[in-house]
Length: 231
Figure (cartoon, rainbow, N blue to C red):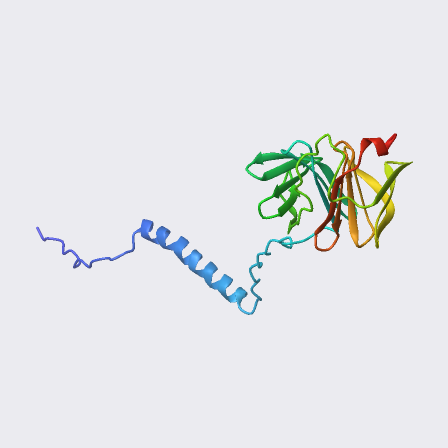
């Protein structure tokens, strides 16, 4: 019986189907990458936004007017600060040492009596409004029952004129002051004429007169309750 001859065996190196399937996504990914790269040629690149620096409030920003009047209680100082439409007034309380503080109507005022530093800020957000040095005019002790004073001008006349104001006329030799004192807080009245500032503490029966520019004290005396009349 003749044997059937078999054709010689030829190896067949076919790529398995799972390999072909695996290559297709890679080819698609490569083509897509090439297309995107080509499309991106010549397109402007958006610059990264530059961060905006925070706005800083000016330091040593002094308001137009600051009044401070020591009270009978050594732990209290009356303060009145005005700058255009901004206004705050009240009684600062001693916090510790010579550090005084007032918080009212969303505003906080701190005063370091040792170096005169005054800081005014928003008591809610902490935003700083003012940071400056103030020269306090008077640190006189609380007045006694005596009406005598070695530092009093020759003549002082105070007359109520209504609307929280008192007319003041003060003379001493060539010195004279004539003007209205306006109630700032409690029973404290303040007025000035560009040269001097007059501070009248009705509760303490004391008048202090200082140089507006330098803060130098000219007079610090008791205004007798006998002369005050109906004030």
